[in-house]
Length: 116
Image (cartoon, rainbow, N blue to C red; front, top):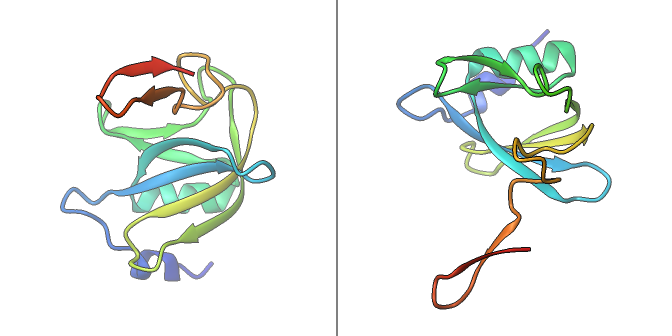
């Protein structure tokens, strides 16, 4: 398997790149997480999305404990090479809170938070 992606990616100083997960058919933005070279390769190898957990300092396969998995449909790299877009097929809610996605709070013009 060629790994052109690893030379095209601009990792940060910690060796990470932000990855946005988007439902492939509805285009709903589900979440943002981090990936490193190993998690990118694991995702491409298995077709199941794998991230890097900064809090655990370890690979984290989405849904490994919740069952709410993400199957990779397509991986895209932005024009600067510093963000990955993952088009996925999400099983169950994407957010650990049980919400369908992690972006369920709105911010008003005066900075107040509200839940959708």
